[in-house]
Image 1 (tube, helix red, strand yellow):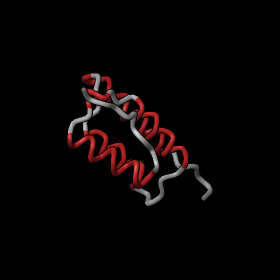
Image 2 (spheres, one colour; image 1 turned 90 degrees about the vertical axis):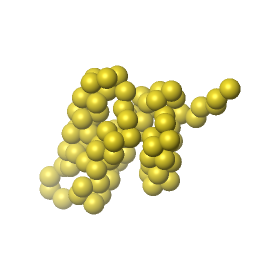
Image 3 (tube, helix red, strand yellow; image 1 turned 120 degrees about the horizontal axis):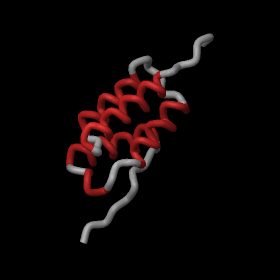
Length: 88
């Protein structure tokens, strides 16, 4: 491949817009970011790195059932784990 894939930059930009909008990232917004990474059929190291950084910014109180399902799928597919939380 002669041209470097720059989708990771688009992913980062999109996440800044999502977090900047209301300070949180929901499952729909995360799905759009994942779609950027997957649209060329290859998720490279830069895309996985950016995805991991985005996931690390998700606060435990933001994880609802839809987000949990999405994070579980990401962990299984890419090996990227969200911060574990315990509820009292």
